[in-house]
Image (tube, rainbow, N blue to C red; front, side, top):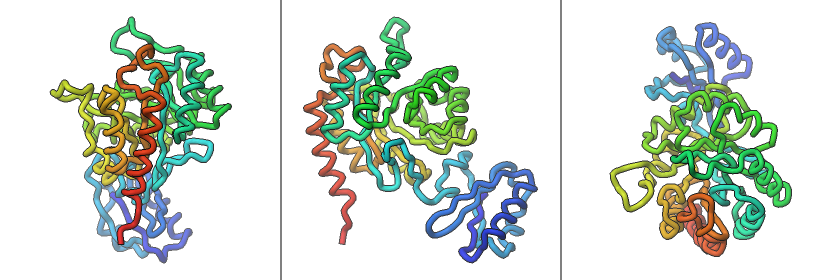
Length: 339
């Protein structure tokens, strides 16, 4: 249930109203936008009579919310959330970013790739230090040494870094290293202990959709993080597993406008994992940009044929630079005012 507050309400009235809600055993989620203030009532709202709420002086109107996700719901928070990823890099609310880098951190080539993607216009650096792989015999990543290499690249280039955390026991390590954005991969999108643990931090979380997850399941995963106090959540559409076998996954571009309708959280698109083939990454990056993604996450490698993982979906630096030029044209077309 949400209560929309009248513009004439004073801070004293608002505080009194929140205290009254909490006195009923509910949590009050206060969202102050440019045009209105919305208070979400979270908990067993059957203890509150909506007609009583509407009769209160400061309440403009009351609306029931049927969806189980509350903190992620745009009805509770009409204004877009803008997530600060560090070094002045913002995602959401009209701020568009490109996250680029290798699938796995492999060694000294990381800094070469990082320099190349930054020169092409990327604003954030990605790279996996810990890798979730289907086979236990496949490359599992460099571990903590990979985090150190990412931090060295960040120190030189000033690019916030995005890297995946897989184990609740490693969350504090990521915090101590100063990782700017912790990524929750598709395989861990319903690892609820991990979601709760990153929810206890103040670090932005890039949450990927599960391999066969619905949109509502993605939003409920975000709710797990936000319910622990961390509201810096960025959602990522990365393709879902379907009956189609011509691509690695099926890129659900529908999800971008649907998520913007349902939630205030920023939405990122990952065309690399969605398609699985280099030849499809650039066209799908352009399509996601046109569909309204707040950011893109693209894999880039300077020697894809010798990459430790996912070389078959990585762009070369030259290909990435060309894609970035095309993305800029799409962004200009979709953001310009139409008379």
